[in-house]
Structures are given as structure tokens and as C-alpha cells.
Image 1 (tube, rainbow, N blue to C red):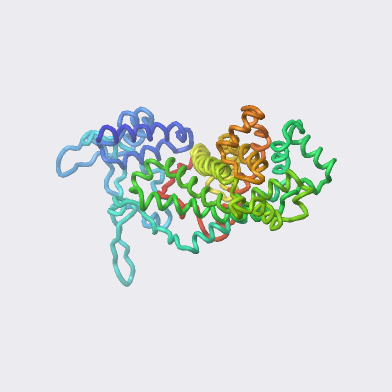
Image 2 (spheres, rainbow, N blue to C red; image 1 turned 90 degrees about the horizontal axis):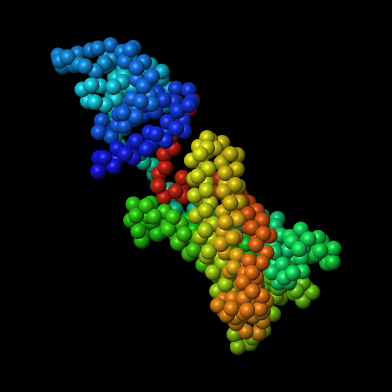
Length: 458
């Protein structure tokens, strides 16, 4: 209804005044912006109260002119055409001589001097008339050409994700080794730094890089699969399953579902590789000489009746962890980025500040996702360790783990995992954005909605 719409415009007006009103010339620009609204939507009283000095200045400097031969109780300056150069430089729109002015006739605000809805360009060869920014074109919705999301587009997203995941996971392999050891050998280390020092002292520095081969292969697959899959499912759900309006209204739900579906696909390739990595870290004397392919063969042959299915004994717990972690990761990253840009919109202006936001938002999303998915991560490690010679499901594994070690065992190694996840997810999103930009893919190409950002320069 009109009343609800007016309330929303009032809330927007108050928010803009609160956030930007202290800047030089900001109140005039805000008042001019809301003077462009239809009279029934204008927050007239608030504009008069908070922009009163600007309005009084406009009233004192304007002249009374007749309109259609009748007395006009509002003060409107005589028509003055909009300078032609404004069409070439939008930054020069509405300079200081334009002011908001209250009209007694319409009981609303107008802009003085009046703005031309069209302009005429006269040259020696011809004369042409065209609409200005404030003419008929202003009543049309802003639009842009929708990007072509072809196979090549998603392939570039996969390359960006794969490169980002491999680099970040390779850098934090020592943290991952300590985390796994703390879960497979509870009580042996006092903390992450004590664990790293003990492993390096007893087994050598190289032991902090156990499972490197499996890490690179596994997270190359993870990055290549999860990032393009998330973008695909998010758009597919919004375009094909739900109506665009419904998808926008339930953006959080769409993000969670798309993240979960992408994580399912990633888990299918990651499960056997992760099982190899855990065994190489937990029992290096047995599995380090075998390498990745040799460890895969050993796991596959442990139960001849099951064969390759042995490689997926940890699938339920890993998929559970990845679905929880992945869905929360993408949602938390997007919302935390929006929150940061909402408070400091100027951070969008420079590439390095925008990448800094990706780094901070990625660290937050990684730590939050780690806390939420920690129980499943602990069960994954337990199942991979105990399932030799047979399959152990997630429910049976959880029950056995709690019976043997207590509920606290579900959160063992949480601090190291938060550090680990915060580091790698921050790096993932940072490098993903870097490589994505190198391939010419912008954030707007991935948006479900055409976003228009309004900033007021002081």
C-alpha cells in the first residue's frame, strides 16, 4: 500500500541522514533525491525538519512566478535548461545552485531551478533533441545485459576455485597435520603449538607435511567442483525452480541449499582422497611409502567383498560435515561481506580494499563454519580410523565415539580447526576473487539481482 511504501522511504531517508548527513552538502543531496519521489511517497515532515536550513536557503533565493495565469503560493524559479555537459559527466549533476523547495500547491518538495526533460543540440549541420537523465528515461527501470553463463564461464570459475583451494590448503598443511593428530591421538598434545613442536622434534620437520600429495589432489577437486557448482545451483534454483521474486525474498535459503548441493558433489571426489590423507598422517610409517595411489589400493583391498566401496566408508560423515560447512561458509561469506560494505561502502571503490573485505569475510565464515561442523569432522576422523575391514556408518560411529570418549570428544581440536579453517577459507575467497578477476568475471556476473549502489560524496 502507499502508506507502507511511504514508511519504507521514511526509513531510508532517516538512515541516509544518520549515516551521511554530517558530510559537506550531504543534506541538500539527500533532500534533492527524495524530492524526485512522487508527492505521496515523500517524507515531507522529516525532510522539513532535518533539511530545514537547506529548504529555507532555497526559499529565500528563489523568485515567485505565475503558473497558467494563476497565483502560485509556491516559490519556483523560472525554467532554466540543464547544461549539456551534464550528459557527458554525471558527477556534475545537481550542482550547488539546485535546491529542494517546498510547494504549497502539491504539499511536497520540488527541485529548483526546474530541470529540463529534454535538450536540443545545435550544430552547423543539424539540430537534434534528446532526453536527459531526468526525462522519460528516468521512469524506466535500470537494466543490464545478463551474462552468458556458458560452460566456459563455469570452467573459469572452476579454475579460479581450484587454484585458490590448492594454494591455501598447501600453505596450511602443518596445521592440518596437527589437527588430525590431536583427533587421532587425544591427550597427547597440549595445544596446536605444542603439537607442531612435538611432531617436528620427534619425527622431523618433514612430518609436518604428511599427506601433501593427497591434500593437493583432493582440494584441487574440491575447488574445481564446489565453486562453479554453487554458482550454477544458486542460479538454477532462482531461475528454474523458484520465481525470481521468491528467490530474492528467500536469498538465505537459496544460498544454503545451493551450498549444500555443491558440497555433495565435492564430497564424492574428496572422500577417498581424505581417507588416504588421514591414514598418511595418523600412521606415516605404514602409508607414507605407499603414496596416494598405493594407499587407495590398500584401502580398496581391505575387504574384497566390498572392493571400491571401502573408499567411501567415510562418505556419510564427510558429506555431513561438508554439507554443513559448505552451506554455512557461502552464506556467512556473502552476508558478512554485505554487512562490511553496508557500513563502509567506500571499500568497494578500490581493488585492494575489496579484496581485503573478501579476506576478512572469508576468515569469519571459515571460523563460524568450523564451529558448526566440528562434531561431524570429529566423527569423520574416528570412522576413517576404525572402519578398517568393514563399513562403519555415521550414527554407529558417533555412538561408539561418545561411549568410548564422551561427548567432549566431538569438539576435540576445535581451536586448531577454527584457526585452520579461518586461514584457508579467508585465503580461498581472496584467491578465488583474484583469479576470477583475472579471467574477467566480476561480482555482478554472479549476482541474482542487478544491484545499484548509491553513495553521497561529501
